[in-house]
Image (cartoon, rainbow, N blue to C red):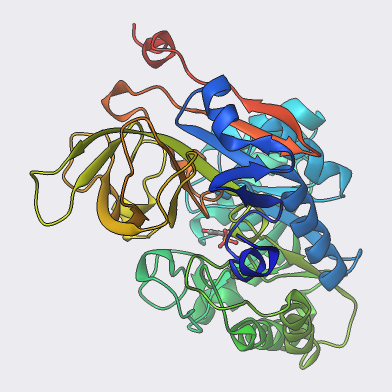
Length: 430
Ligand code: PLP
């Protein structure tokens, strides 16, 4: 495949090339890596992730508070990389906090998000000098006040507001709108703000929205920020100092078939102009991108097992992974473009159904995959746009061990996460 054709495939890792059908990242053959490390294997083009981070930094500037959404994918090495680039992390659980802490020894650049924060997690965050906490509901105000006072801290908090600006996205990843469980509605935000302001141990530091994932239209960010800035301007008496406008995550990242996304600078301008429409004092922007940082840099390699010609209209290829390493197709019906990257395959293609190994009829990785018509048992299949919400959502369903994760930077392998052994899957049994 020539460079021009590859460039058009904006959902692939930037440093991926094909040579006679075999895929490479840098100088490393993914086929050889699959033999060396086994499959299923998650592979990240680490230099592509670095580029994504610097694209955000260029578009939003050094002053922005970057809080990468760990939920998309996290491991210690990624925390280190983000920290080197001056990015903090958006965490939603004790496990994500522990990952950050084990790399950095502090949670000071972390933002604690989520609808349910346990007292143990709140204490853990505060004990480790945690940065901002986003308040999701009014019940949290008294709990946080109590824990902050017991931990002897004045805790910076931001208030998550649920605005009805929505996002043109899959209903399962839409996180704003009246009938959604996230944040407080604007009608009660004012009294929540006053409660926070009057609380001794909490420090009101700004507002937060996250309108959903895969947002193509920058105007939605603008609208959300207009509403937030209008809300704060109307309540200026309760606002003490430099304020944070957290615009959340949800920046678009193309999958196969998606046209080119907007330049990130357009999102940055929309966010700024939405804020400045109503807010004339100092402020900082905070953003929480997840998918747009890691998704297209990641792929998953599978080995094709049996091919069943006697089932349905299309032959079924059974692969050695499935919903335990990537639950997205089963959860959202998402499609990940597959390539057969084994050597010397026919250029003529036909349709296959590609199914996972789990005991669910819904464990179909791709319902209609166009693959070389001589695709055979033992071939290596590469699933693309698979860097976000795959390993982080992986499970041990059927007690299948979680797969290995590696990165490739400048044609060298970085080991990121070990493959689980059979024994690892029973480690918690008593
Ligand atoms: N912030 C919050 C509060 C979220 O709920 C999410 C995703 O669900 C994100 C950030 C990251 O979104 P994305 O990965 O689409 O950038």
